[in-house]
Amino acid sequence: MRSFIYHVAWLSYVAHWVSALNFTIAGGQIFTPGFAVLDAPQPGTPLGGDTIEVALDVSANGKLNLPPYASNSPSLIHNITIFLYSYDTGRNFTITNGTASTNDVSLGDIMKSEPGSTVKHVKWHWPDCLIGDGKPTTLDSDRGFYNISIRQNFRLNGVDHYTIFDVPISVTNRIDFTGNNPPCDSVNNPLLTPEEINADVANTVGILFAPGDATIVQQTQPSSSNDGDGLGPTKPEASPSDGLGSGTSSVERNIIFLILPFLAVGCVFTF
Ligand SMILES: *[C@@H]1O[C@H](CO)[C@@H](O)[C@H](O)[C@H]1NC(C)=O
Ligand SMILES: *[C@@H]1O[C@H](CO)[C@@H](O)[C@H](O)[C@H]1NC(C)=O
Ligand SMILES: *[C@@H]1O[C@H](CO)[C@@H](O)[C@H](O)[C@H]1NC(C)=O
Ligand SMILES: *[C@@H]1O[C@H](CO)[C@@H](O)[C@H](O)[C@H]1NC(C)=O
Ligand SMILES: *[C@@H]1O[C@H](CO)[C@@H](O)[C@H](O)[C@H]1NC(C)=O
Image (cartoon, rainbow, N blue to C red; front, side, top):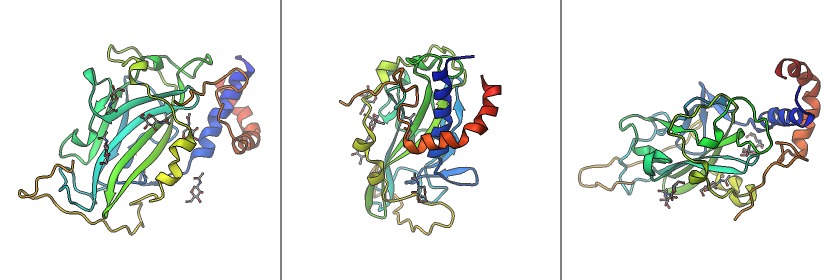
């Protein structure tokens, strides 16, 4: 039996998912505010293994052609960057910022990977501080809840957008040392507050391309004569007084309250 705080962390853990699930899912795919459609992972998945793998269809299931785009095309993807961050641990790792670093410590432009394939399988070796097995057992652990943050820079019908799509996952499955684990500090970025990021404003374009959506995509195919390549913040660490769920809102607390009797049964098996 572990400490009470650990139970609070676990309840908050579940509450994160209960309160954050607002995804547009059809046929096992998750639609985003952009051309990317997420094939995997599903929100809330516990992850581990040698690499974190993110599978994205970058053509909105065939509605946008693959690069190279004509630079004057009304619709194209400028770039997609992906980060792995957590307000619980204060970490914000670069999975890809478009520029490959030495030894793929962070990955290069995913649009140029797997040419000819509309689905890009982004595989990134877990950074070394996430090595371990199971839920975090100490408050200074870097394991636990994360968001895979998919940032899309794209143009849709002549209008440029930069959107933010966060997929909650938990780093709770076993991660072994592989010899290719980037040092955490080498891929870490400052963590911004939700207010600084202001995803609601960034995402006013809304979820696109979900079945039933009537978005018309205008685009120009590249031709040989047109060969444009188209192509301080504080670190809010968990503290002993608030457990891992330091960002837990009152709504989440209410949810915890509501699901507590239900969880009591689960805890018997979990702890
Ligand atoms: C979830 O989606 C619904 C339907 O679009 C919307 O009304 C609601 O505000 C969303 N909730 C959150 C937390 O984003
Ligand atoms: C994940 O993102 C949501 C909003 O997109 C945020 O409310 C939540 O705190 C984030 N989770 C973690 C572990 O940082
Ligand atoms: C992504 O595209 C935008 C818009 O063209 C550009 O401003 C930004 O520098 C690009 N970022 C990367 C990492 O290539
Ligand atoms: C991309 O990320 C790597 C690793 O964090 C960093 O060294 C590099 O400066 C970043 N490049 C850009 C353009 O942000
Ligand atoms: C993580 O770092 C990237 C690159 O600096 C930044 O664009 C992004 O907003 C950061 N994410 C959070 C949640 O602070």
